Amino acid sequence: MTPPDLPTELKSALDARLHGLSRSDTAERSAVISKTYRDGGGSTAIRSEADALAYALARMPATYAAVTASLNALAEITPDFAPNSLLDVGAGPGTASWAAAEAFSSLTAFTLLDANSALRALALDLGGARLRGMSYRQGEAPAELARADAADLVVASYMIGEIGEAERTALADLMWAKTRDTLLVVEPGTPAGYARILGLRAQLIAAGAHVAAPCPHDGPCPLQAPDWCHFSQRLPRSQAHRQLKSAELAYEDERFAYVALTRTPTARRPARVLAQPVVSKVEVTAKLCTAQGLAITKVPRRAKADYADARRWRWGDAVMKEAP
Image (cartoon, rainbow, N blue to C red; front, side, top):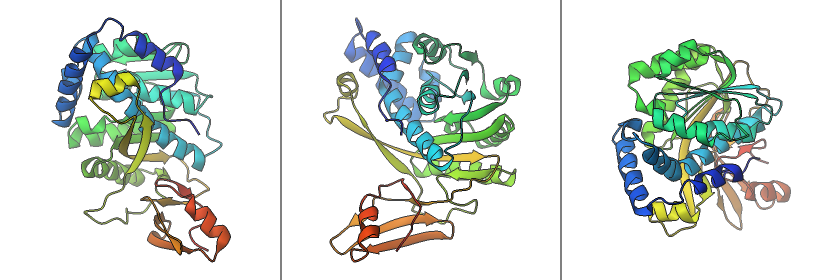
């Protein structure tokens, strides 16, 4: 599986751009940008090269980790999927494209779409050898999507929450129309992010899509409020990342929600671990989403092989055997 840490080439490129910059100024810019995102303003606060770099330093590692975890789950369910072309909607500094390039060595064509000129300039600057020949189109997503060629893999990461519901519905239809094989949508792991994923999921299943991950079925989500489906990916923090966020811990846990939709049903439909299992000397208790719905599975220690397997289950894992 692809590791959640930024590729060495990308980390080096970002670190090189830190030389000569004021860390305090970069941190202040990052804080303003983060607040604007939380308040629903999207990338409107990113107006300059310095703003774009501050955003990338603060958010690229976590976004990369979440998209990587989602792509790893997709690859596990569809091991023969080898896309040649990628369409990255709301690409920002190109984070999802980097994650996809690392996850799928088969990718050779990268088309990125975003309206923000500062993020586009940074993405082109960071692209390097791995994203050589990328096409980055600057403009609003619906218009640029309409003009773009279809791609084997379409990704929209942390962007559908930046637009209104009516525009989101239209964009989902357009993204699906441009998807030859698989569409991946990643959002923050909040109740609101999960709700957006659920809405898009239902809309596109009605249009003929099938869920590859995380759900083991195409039916309604079995979770009931206040519960919601989300996952967590731990990622290492560099020294610059810790300084930028005034953080002491050497790691960060990114909570995210996602759905991967395919044109054809997948052959494998494993259950999904929805929370970190509870391990005791007597049994392993795990909350699973199964093809039949929600299940609380208990694997007793007396079933030695199954118990040993269940002890290795982690939040977000695909599980082929639900119980002994």
